[in-house]
Length: 301
Image 1 (cartoon, rainbow, N blue to C red):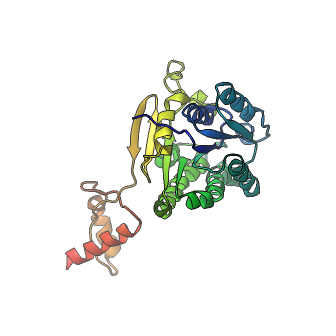
Image 2: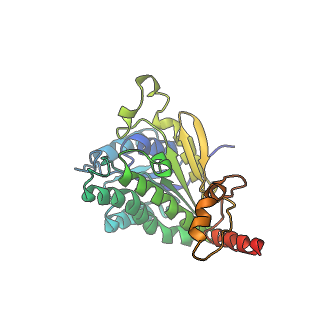
Image 3: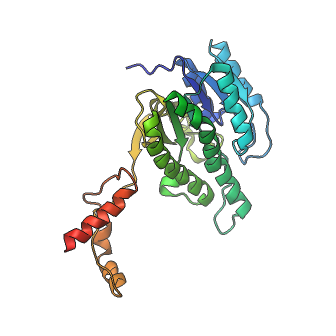
């Protein structure tokens, strides 16, 4: 099966380098018309220049593809809306959104300034919200859309010094879960990608002999699958060095301990059973938690 994006229009944020650049190049190589968005700032989000995005556009055009550069900050909803309008005015539609833009402001929580916490949330979470909100009416109208969030193992599992980044990245998963439910009847599929790759944000974390294996190029297959016509929806796909896994937010079978004044003590006594992962499930929606708790009540009668 060949993943063909001919006739599709894609927007990739943070596409001036690293993962975003590889995403944009891969989509263009397979036939998509691409909006290469990048503020062109430093890793911490300071500064800005459209030159990085334009360099990627030049690569795409030189290879025979179609693309244009856009320097909007994803934190600026008006600018994001203008970017989406430009894509629709130029190519008539927008089919794919890859929310890849991000910054780092790492510090232990004790030392972290709250302004740095808020800014990371603003870029990663609200940036994804702004872009999704801007493309949503067009995807609804055409009854087709593919949105890929970029989450992280730091959000899924935690990482020292990244409370801000981890919170923003797991928040993207929560956003994806409901957005996918709401988009299903409109032909819009929404997924999340958790990459492991050597970029300017992570290059110092890898041993030198592993840098090539964890090239951003090796994450691209997961993005292409999640952006494709036959994409799943509500998947969290992990990727790095040619390896791929799926992450799930699960629910254990649980235990009914009842109510009343002694419920806390009964819960404490049975906490190991509550947390036992035997027979855990992946709920189809938030309502399934309540349904499971109702089942526990009924089974206890």
